[in-house]
Image (cartoon, rainbow, N blue to C red; front, side):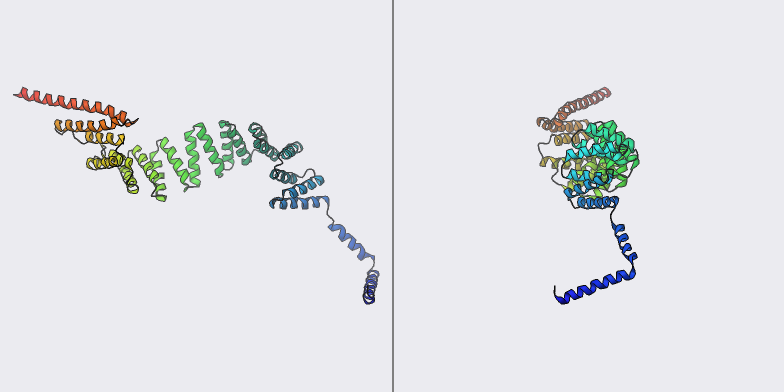
Length: 398
């Protein structure tokens, strides 16, 4: 040290000693007290370590999080927060056996804490032991019967075990506690479906739709279930709404036509199939179905029906359905006021169409056509008998 620096150091040291002597020992004692105040207690140290563990966990530094938690538990063996973070850190490191032991010891140390049983249930569930998982979760539910999450998890394990009645009870309780939780409602709907409880399933799906009125999947589901219940008006309204969002969806348009037919709205079904053909002019079956509707007793547009069934058969000449419908159009086309010979001619023409359908060996429509051939023959016999009767009555008058 240079002489000049040593002199400066010496002067400063002497000055400090002088000030200490001047102000007395009281100032020195204050310094000692302040140092004791900032010294961490075990509780404070544990809290700092726990905060560090949380930060490590959030940063995916699981080894460091584990180490911090173990230090906390060395200081405070009853620290529940440390157990929770440690369990997650071990799980992320795939130390599953250690997690299992940790939560077992937790339930022994805190037998009245539902969280420990819930975590232990999750470990059993991960091991595929859903029966034991359900037992542990049932214990958690008993300790904390107002926690919807516990009932939801219990329902999950019962679903894995295909214990549908028990799953229904668990999910219904979860929905009662948290009616706005869509996950529980969706799982409850699944359980209702497994149990074949259509009424309950429809009510559940409607409840979900009320919360999410623009959900297309739910709209289609409620529509389908409404059809099963015979509520065609609700189903129709939902499909109309779906088509407002997707006006070019051919499948939706066809489904709407089916619903309209089941609801007795043949005119509406005709309009729906016309829309289908606007969207896809190559839909042979669409032409044939439209022709069937147009020749029905409600519409009776036989000219359009013939044109459409011919268009369908031009696209698909192997359609036994199409040939059968053409045969039916010919039968329907006439009136009882027509001349019997004209009706006989139409029935004979119908037979030629049904015969083409029968030759195609379609599982449904060829068999239908064979029955219709016999029916048309009987109709011809009836008309021929009427003609003979008229001839006889004319002879009687003479």
